[in-house]
Amino acid sequence: MLDLRFSEAELERRREHITEFIRSQVDAADADGTVLGLSGGIDSTLTAHLAVEALGAENVHGLVLPARVSSEGNMSDAERVAQDLEISYDVIEVEPIVDALLEAYPEAEGDREAVGNARARARAVLNYLVANHEERLVLGTGNRSEAAVGYFTKYGDGAVDCHPIGNLYKAQVRQLARHVGVPEELAAKTATAELWADQTDEDEMGVSYETLDSILATHIDGPLSVDATARLLEVEAETVEKVRGMYERSEHKRRAPPAPEPLD
Ligand SMILES: Nc1ncnc2c1ncn2[C@@H]1O[C@H](COP(=O)(O)OP(=O)(O)OC[C@H]2O[C@@H]([n+]3cccc(C(=O)O)c3)[C@H](O)[C@@H]2O)[C@@H](O)[C@H]1O
Ligand SMILES: Nc1ncnc2c1ncn2[C@@H]1O[C@H](COP(=O)(O)OP(=O)(O)OP(=O)(O)O)[C@@H](O)[C@H]1O
Ligand SMILES: [Mg+2]
Image (cartoon, rainbow, N blue to C red; front, top):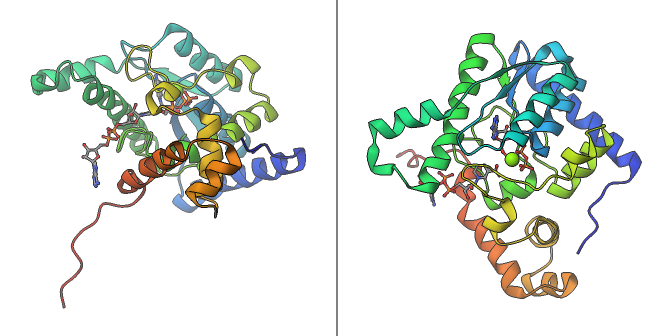
């Protein structure tokens, strides 16, 4: 696989580039800081660290939003991140919101994916409740690896005002997190969306982040063909094609909803 890690100098350059990005987004919107969901996972932990560096702790508001399927370990890690960064945070249960949705539309009861995505969308509603009330921007936590294959909930965790770490592959997220001082036990954690019990990103996607990152860098974001990528990375051509399919099928998640062309 490709070694996508940055040099020390490049890590510092990325850190400055992202913190400057966060400041410029907040300034351009004339907002009073930011709000973001804290899951105890590495994407939100790194984003919170960089937001505090960019804006100061008083301008970052964390939301820890447990669901029935959330693990206690992740929720206590999320609170620890907020406490270590000395940002204000709220803990709000999302399950009553999801239950209300299912009471309104019981047909979806037991549909793991639909209910899981409703959890992500309930969190988005809460993020924007705070953002509207406190005149903040909602920080996204998505990285390039997830965005490229559509591994996020449309208008759930994808409903945000900007994507500070949106150009980093997952391996680079972990590396930058270690660089800015995120504790190793968080930086090394298995990625999970936690939309249902025992979910992990790699199991659900059917490809490891190591392989995914390399295929994205080589074929989707890079110039090599399917066959050349397969040869270079020593993976099956079908694996490259699978990632290409995920990328193409999720195009709709990366652009604004279309409307018919204007008529003359
Ligand atoms: N071609 C197309 N053009 C326009 N719209 C299209 C479309 N195909 C589907 N759609 C719409 O998109 C919907 C499907 O998209 P969506 O609702 O997102 O649902 P979907 O992509 O099926 O599920 C979300 C996936 O992201 C994963 N996820 C979610 C949240 C967080 C994380 C994480 O890593 O933490 C991962 C989750 O585990 C699941 O695999 C359809 O119901 C339809 O409304
Ligand atoms: N229980 C939760 N409380 C608050 N926010 C959450 C919760 N679960 C998910 N989110 C939000 O949804 C985002 C997307 O989840 P995702 O799993 O991709 O990121 P992560 O948990 O930060 O990192 P990882 O992918 O390594 O698990 C999180 O970064 C966070 O902002
Ligand atoms: Mg997670």
